[in-house]
Each structure stands twice: as C-alpha cells, then as structure tokens.
Length: 60
Image (cartoon, rainbow, N blue to C red; front, side, top):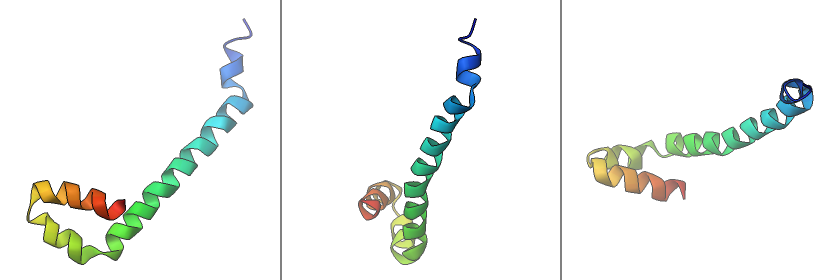
C-alpha cells in the first residue's frame, strides 16, 4: 500500500531531475559546435550520406 506513494515521493523525482539536465549539457555543446562551423556543415549538406558520417566525426 505504501509502494504507490514511494515513486511519487520527492526523492524519486529529485533523482530523475538531475539526470535530465546532465544529459542535456552535452547535447548543447554539440549544437554550439555545429553553429561554430557552419561552413563545413554546408559543404557536407550536398552529400546526404557523407553529411551523417562527417557530422559524427566533427562531434567526436
């Protein structure tokens, strides 16, 4: 009977909240890098296949 309220408790949400922003941080860095190098990204836009591989290489 006390199981349902447990997950809804504050501690449960607290653990989930910090995990979300932490993962969003790396995503933001990748977006900034892409905006920093608009020239290479545009060149690869010509080739759809190369664009995927090239973008991954730049982020790496």
